Image (tube, rainbow, N blue to C red; front, side, top):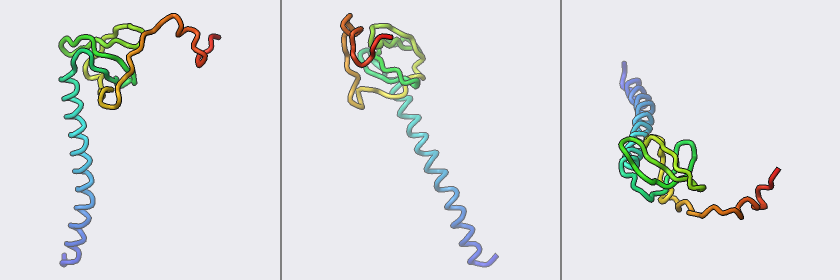
Length: 110
């Protein structure tokens, strides 16, 4: 192998390895942030699950948490289902559901 071929081989190796390294590094950073969020969940914190459900943490017990959703229903999830904090992106508005909500013009009764 002459010098030109060696340089070409090194450039090709860098072009293949560097993007892979950067992608793995970014993915590892996201995983660490998610683990940190999941371990630091506290009652009253607004969160979003992997399925897109918005709720407020009621209680954490072991690897599970209870979330209160808009209508007051409390649901139990694994902490792994929590993917981000809604507080960090502007929050989830806490609203009281009343009988007047049944007359919402946006959602007509069929």
